[in-house]
Amino acid sequence: MSDWERLVLLGLLWPLLWLQGRHVRRTAPRMPEPPGHRAGTAGNGSLVRLLVAGDSGAAGVGAASQEQALCGQLVQRLSRKHTVQWWVLAVNGMDSAGLLQLLKNSPSARFDVVVLSMGANDATGLCAPLQ
Picture 1 (spheres, helix red, strand yellow):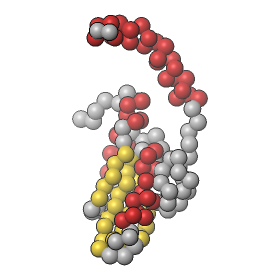
Picture 2 (picture 1 turned 135 degrees about the vertical axis):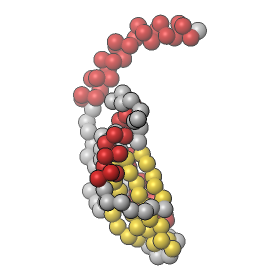
Picture 3 (picture 1 turned 90 degrees about the vertical axis):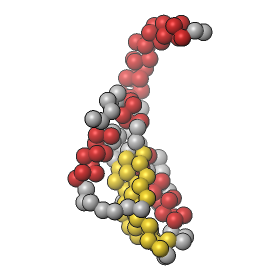
Picture 4 (picture 1 turned 180 degrees about the vertical axis):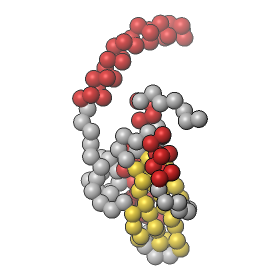
């Protein structure tokens, strides 16, 4: 199939794809963020300051607890050899503009490791890149 044939096919299917996407966004269940602490200290050894920030992936959606979520798993492994001071700054459904505002409103701090989980909500919300 040539590029122009793909474009024609996509053009013909676009209304159906748009309606399906709208239906899924309206009817798909929104999973809650897991319970548990969003900051803490664990382990012994040299200090590592960890920030996990972003959207549902960073917030731990899908995990039973924060200990089982992304940050909890990182803390569990890093704390074997380090003292880990950790923070989760994340909200389910967050887009890039929301994360930028959340970070601006948070107290300034220094981190040794920052993990960002972003993009899905920007893509599904058709957000333009930040200027």
